[in-house]
Length: 215
Image (cartoon, rainbow, N blue to C red; front, side, top):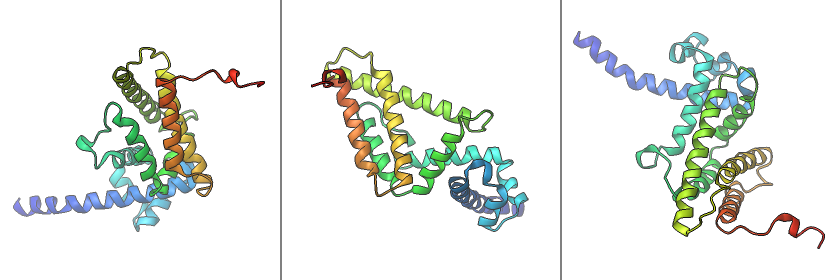
């Protein structure tokens, strides 16, 4: 019994290492080929395993796909306190820092972009994941806006929902442009510019666009 327990304990780090290898390979494969064309056989070949070996660790391609997305999200907050994004106004700075970090991990960004775009199709296994993710992020960014508005004495908070959705849309859209041509877009600077513009638009609304037309 002692020997069996000892062997089991020793196997855990090895199992986690192998799972991480598979996840890293899946990020590369799904990012390059998409979740439909990227196969478990591709991933197995990348890590020197059999198709059955990959299934042993993750059970199915769908489960692996969801694990990849969870792995990506956890990497965003791995070094943060309580492994959670900050609350309040600090959240906006965190989003800018995330864009800067994403410049150093194009593979993860590409996988996220490919899978999020694919998730709008009927029956896609990641659809529920992204629906929940965007709902949660909109809620968290809206809460940060409410706290910032209270801090700055802004009472008109009607646009907060639109502002929160716009920040997320701009960040994802800039990632797509950056992936297509990294020389055309400075991901961190453009993200900071957009987030600052939206935050300032909530705190200090300017004239309507129609004001400038026909001048």
